[in-house]
Structure formats: structure tokens, C-alpha cells
Length: 101
Image 1 (tube, rainbow, N blue to C red):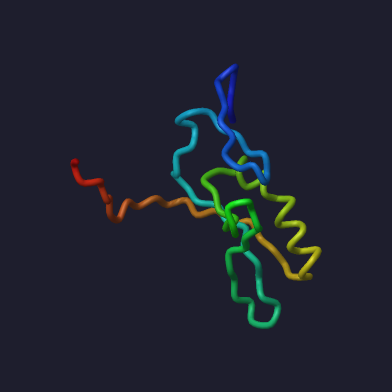
Image 2: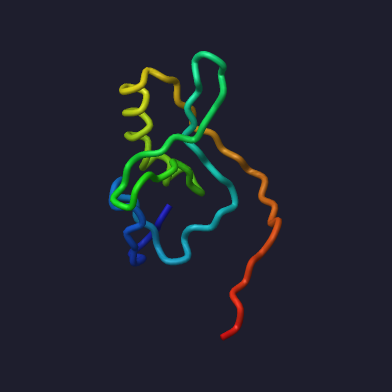
């Protein structure tokens, strides 16, 4: 949650999500996931943004709630169940750094 009078930056124009500088850290991953009714397989859903398809994943509940209307539209348009999932264990597997210029 952004507190006080911190300057905020527009993160997503499609859903109106804003965040303060250095506010977003990926300590957990959230995803809106559809469930195939025939075989119960799951897949991350996406919505069309001005930059093309945007997977509905984020690093916090606030961000995911800003996308909830798109998840609800998916349910309404497809008739397929959608779940909000949270993955909480962070493991840094590899860090790629830019070469010095």
C-alpha cells in the first residue's frame, strides 16, 4: 500500500495501476489462472493492452486486484473458471548483469 504523499508512477494504463518509486519488489508471484473444464489443466490468462497481450501476473495483491475486472470478463466471456493463485517462495536462480561499456 502506498502511504502519504509519495510521488506515484503509472504502471499500467489499461487497469490504472500506480506505484511509488522503489515500491515494487518481487518477493512473491501472483497469477490469474484459468481452469480447463474438460481436463482441469491450468493456464495463465492475459488481456489485450496497448502493448499487446499482457499476462495477468504480478508481485502483490494490490496489483492483482487492479486486474480483477479482466479476470471477471474472462469468466463471463468464456464460461471458464478463473482462480487467483499466489506463489510465495523466492529463489534467485541466476543473475544476468550488463557488460561494462
